[in-house]
Length: 321
Ligand code: FAD
Image (cartoon, rainbow, N blue to C red; front, side):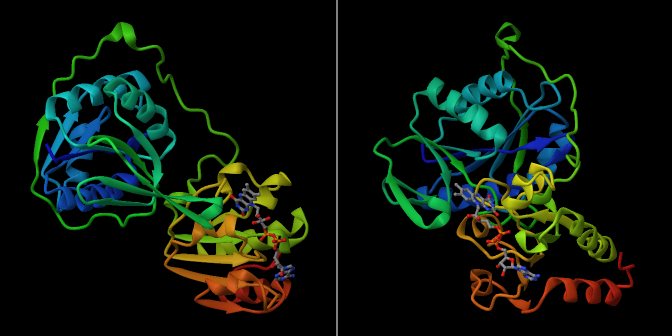
């Protein structure tokens, strides 16, 4: 068969954006193989999630009602059984914390080759997967020799599918062996600032080493408040312990795709850019005319942030600390 099976993702009652990116990636690949696109929605409010992923291009959605949150053993069993039942050619999972948890186990269980963190997929009688290395400086293409494969796709590389679909939604009766379930989610505990998921934010104000001292974050927070934005940062800010790790944008942080990304005192190193190049509009505030961030910026102010930010706070009706 030349079908594609893609796995949707949710967390704490919310469908994650990557699920709609899976639809786009899956449809693209299924168009190349000439097959159908199947989506799997496992655990939680599957009917609600299935309705949300029912976008144009999806041929069938399979729901597995079992438990609430992601569970390695449930996902592994359900996907293996669904794959055996549908016999698709390719299996797609998000290259997320969850996807990277179950994809290797599923691939091993189904004896499929696994390629992780794909940024492009080409199928022309064989699958070629593109991956990025060294923060996007180097691209590697992998020709998969086997005719069936599992691939995890990098979040935010494919656009989110739009347009209502009319896929059939069918309950799949997975035979989950409870004795094989070795862990259960008993609750969630937030780390400080852990309530914020910058990868889902529409408007990010991001700070870098240019802010110079931790106490200057107060100034940026005033701008964040005045503009109703979300605060993120480059890695040195996190390394200094000035913001929690979940605020870091970049290769070793989060990939973000906001409508607007304001980079304040950030040079635009390749490892940072790897996380924010997908923003719709990029604004830079930087004193250095040669900073690499200008190569990406749609708008910018080449000036001292300590002059610019107070002026912006006032412009947006906020209080300058
Ligand atoms: P800098 O490069 O020091 O830039 C500071 C900028 O502020 C400069 O451009 C300067 O002109 C400007 N500036 C200074 N004062 C002012 C002022 N008063 N007003 C306006 N502008 C001012 N980095 C990440 O961000 N995310 C990652 O995920 C990441 N992962 C990495 C993984 C690896 C394996 C490695 C090796 C590195 C990684 N890095 C990452 C680090 C990365 O290489 C850079 O060191 C980092 O992004 C630089 O952060 P920055 O732009 O804040 O600081």
